[in-house]
View 1 (cartoon, helix red, strand yellow):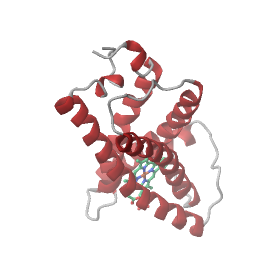
View 2: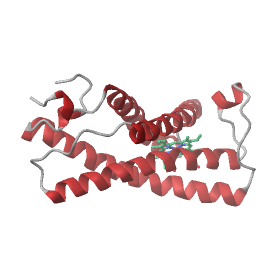
View 3: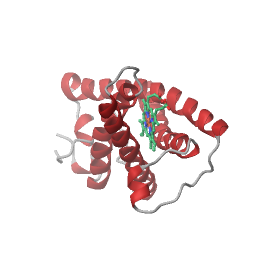
Length: 181
Ligand code: HEM
């Protein structure tokens, strides 16, 4: 059993799992909605979901970065090899970076392209970037390559978490699980 001081705080776990569920939906929806020949109304709904949940994720990642800065994570598990800690640390920081870059690039791609973001439009939030074909194309490339990068990193992250939780059962998984051990 992991002592409570070895677990992430409740706020960190809430942010982790709420974002995890949303991002796991965002990636396949992002790839699916751009497929040719997709039913038009399904495509529209997927775009509306993706753009608006993406903006919510941008707000959540800003809160998460501030939370992480103000609340130190628990100490690293002592039984892991140095290389494992290094790979885990690098994966986590790359995920944080992509979780910020992806919604910003998506936002810029849509706004610079002159398209709506329904929730922001309903609240009267104006576009924060000018309309520009070049800017929209640049943001589109960043979003596309970032989409593949985040999919690969998430697969690595989930595989490592499942290995700890189901095979090694060494308490690493329960540090982030919603209920305290
Ligand atoms: C964590 C947040 C996000 C993730 C993980 C994500 C992921 C993806 C992925 C994997 C794709 C398919 C690859 C591509 O063509 O780019 C995609 C496409 C797209 N995403 Fe996102 N996205 C996020 C946030 C956003 C936001 C905030 C917006 C806009 C407000 C947005 C708008 C779009 C658009 C318009 C496309 C189609 C790209 C095109 O072909 O023009 N995304 N997204």
